Image (cartoon, rainbow, N blue to C red; front, side, top):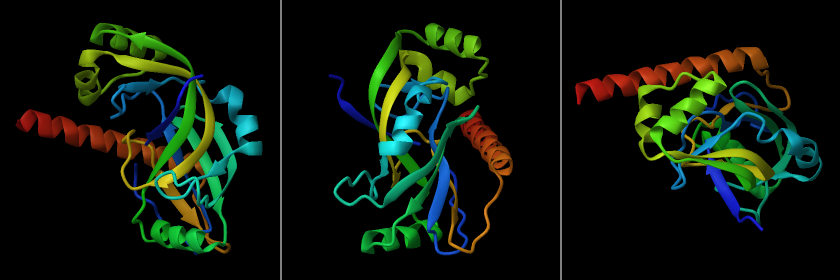
Length: 213
């Protein structure tokens, strides 16, 4: 049986209310993450298992603390960007601590606990770039640099949980908003536009740093 894996993905958490709910991208498609396997998660990887995940999955404590889960998933769907999730935080001692950290923007990232069910190895940079082209993705300069030793293309996963984390593996998996019982929340369309804008800004900054070097 495939082993359990953890994969983290960022952007600033914005708080409203007491942080009783939060939402964001638990996984982002197309980019190569910082894991030792240099993974790319392909669109469709989560689709078959989302119904079961919403029925049986959970939200782990900070940094995948399965002994102290903090809540349950309320929504999970694949968008063009990645796996977008929304969760409630239970009114427990640990849950209240996490709410405060989310509201204050101390914890800003998400990570998934999953098992790989489908994979393909792209052995060279050329193979990775050919897949990006077939997927209609335009890689950044950083993406191309990361592709030099190839990548593992994850095509199907069994998702067990997602958790707030301090340090992500996928640098684009992030909490995009929190909300309390009386707090407002951005629409999904507004959040997606903001997330994409921040990704583009990050890519631009990285390209500028590379040029300076």
